[in-house]
Amino acid sequence: MQPLEFLQIALYFGLLIAITPLLGGFMATVFCGQKTWLTPVLKPLEGLIYKLSGVNDYEEMSWKEYAFALLTFNALGFLAVFVLMLAQGALPLNPQSTGGTSGYLAFNTAVSFMTNTNWQAYSGEAALSYLTQMLGLGVQNFVSAATGIAVMIALTRGIARKHAASIGNFWVDLTRTTLYILLPLSLLLAILLVSQGVVQSFGSYVSATTLEGRSQVIPLGPAASQIAIKQLGTNGGGFFGVNSAHPFENPTPFSNFLQVLAILLIPSALTYTYGKMVGSVRQGWTIFAAMLAVLLVVLAVSLWSETSYNTVLQTSVQMEGKEQRFGVANSVLWGMTTTVASNGSVNAMHDSFSPLAGGMAMLNMMLGEVIFGGVGAGMYGMLMFIIITVFIAGLMVGRTPEYLGKKIEAFEVQMAMITILAPSTVILIGTMIAVLIPQGLSSLNNQGAHGFSEILYAFTSAAGNNGSAFAGLTVDTPFYNIAIGIGMLVGRFGVILPTLAIAGSLVGKKYTPPSLGTFPTDKPLFAVLLIAVILIVGALTFFPALSLGPIVEHLLMNAGKTF
Picture 1 (cartoon, rainbow, N blue to C red):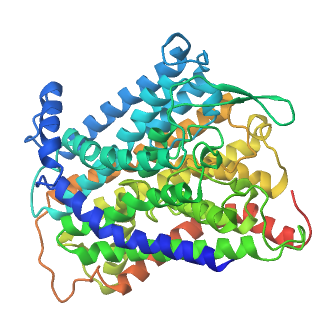
Picture 2 (tube, rainbow, N blue to C red):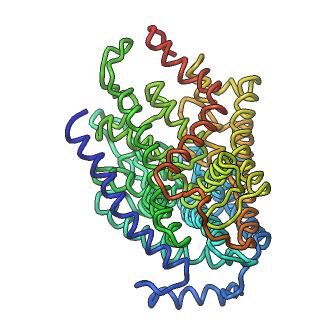
């Protein structure tokens, strides 16, 4: 690695740490209903939205009411995208006269964007109209991200409130997240991206003649506005097929830095928001430190693997499949950032990563997307691991586990285990089925261990609501569209519903003041224990599968065999 690459990575993490308390404090103020510098401008609009939709913003919900509102809203979002994709050929803002998609692809894509996964079995510039991209996918980029943050805030209230019966109002949390956080940040980032040359146009595609005398169609479209929210909302769906490796999505080193920073901006800040809302900033920083420590380790392993001398390829810098304009280090930083953040965007092909780097990307997702994770989803996923860790610590000292004054009992542990087991089941069973039937194997581009990794990565990405693709696997088939769609649904709502159930259980419990026997959860020791629990669960669950994929591929590569 070059000194400049080290400097870029250091600047990246330095800015992330510096921005976390600033943005996190602002979000805490928003969710507590307090006045911010945006209130004079946005409060009238917020009130108008409640009035038009018939929402009483002073009326709170039980966890079941909250869950029902969330499921209803997401079901309507699914139907909107599904219908748009089928009917786009007869709708306006379609200068290329793109026809409707198949029902299988429409189902997969509607589920994908509704669940904040943004898995794409299509190439955006070839398959979708401008209207579908904006009204369908662009809107879901906002509201699916807001849904994840709303669930995290509801769980935070369940922990923070001394004794209550409600966890907030879903419609209020959804509206405030979108109005005060996602829209302003997206507007600012979109303007910066346009200044770097990211395309934002309603014009038709342009035909050009290359230097070789051949005809080439240059795609256009309202890309910058969608790219801003796809990164800030940890969505990841590319406007163009090759995502952020496309020069119209990511034209300069500065646009690349802005986008990769935007991926972790809100997830990292939410750790501070959580600390503020539960009344202990140290709690938030402890969680942030645990997340950052794991990210730095997987990043270091991946950079070492990608820059070590490869006896088969006879090179120490493996540029194949990487972003030529930005170099290996920036491609690896993006790859590790996007897979820890449940984002899914790529600026290089993960299929071209070395076996260990590709394995680290898979491991990031297999850990439950809790190392920063998706906006909101990463934090409530991490809190599930915290509940398990506190329970184990309680067993070690022989007393009822407590977390921030709330007793952790059998129900909370059972629900937390469901949130961990549901995505794991999708990954392992989905991969098993795919490698056993012709419909799963016929789409492979590679055989052996690498081919297995392609299938394993696909189901891991779906279950973790990540959306990034290993590439090399053709997924626009009936089998993969349906199987991965089901995996995304389980990975999203199989985690959200138990999380809300825990929020409802904790909010009704009386606060117990800490005593000498209370295990502190804002100390370095707890962070180490938390990391250990996360790694043990991930390693024990997925080590056999990883051994059949990236681990054995690494060993075979060192022996001179590639796939």
